Length: 404
Image (cartoon, rainbow, N blue to C red):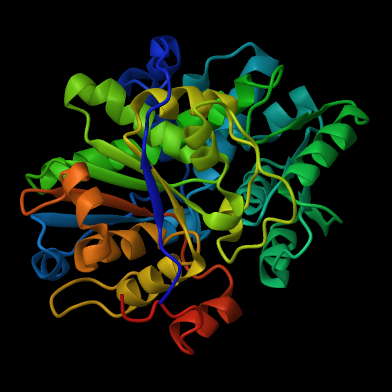
């Protein structure tokens, strides 16, 4: 029998995070959406409706936002990186972000005015590629550090975008600290990181607002389907995406906000442990997990404030959960669309199908209110970003779930 998913209700003491949630309100996110729409590479990513799956698992609807189509980069991360870089350059020039269109950012006139900017970052893959891509498009420089054990394919994808990229000895959080140290040595450089700590909060907040683009797209696409989510499952590393989506929907829907569940891998479950302890906690060590994009041990302090006040459940998931999700999405039921989802993108699908099909979870499923009236929104945050690992899991059945 496989190791079980651990799920706990959020019993953290509540605090006033209204000011933080306000940064994710629709007016702010419309600025990010307009910024992204100015890029010639912009196209709204699809929201895939899985009616046959919904009928099979006994819910009213299942919708998956497929971020594998984002800017040709196979992942959502570029939304946050590009917006933060745009906001940073806007501040350098004393401009408003509304003036920072792609055309202006990429112009020789602007480059001559601000000179060479070096953007430092740490990544497990997708964020670094987004920073590298945006820096390349804007004629600027990117330096990227990756933790030990990072995929060679992801490293080469970042280098292919023109960045200086290397794998360090240490985990993701060590790479973050290295990026900060090295940036401090270089005049005209800045760290673009989606995790926040004391004294480093503005850029992570901008990154979260950039992620708001996909939340705004998803909300409108749901309306186009005459649907409204009752449950949202979002995976988390440092929690920036989860906090951004939670913040957006909390701002948009208030007391009628959908039930929100945050999922992490067992090996890097800093938010789960924080919720369990009812206070901010970190996770150390190697954090080896196939969910490479989620292998983070220190929660984003801004996101944690949103999540501890608004999330209803936290889940810590064994590796088989996302492997199961990848196989389900890659082999849909008749009539449903196919989604190519990577390791960090499919954990929500694996968890949803397990919750609705395994009697062991009946109690928590009932507590979640997950039933025939539920409309579930999931986010497949990356496509096939590591082809060898994808084949190991989908073709060869690595990390089997077994019969639950």
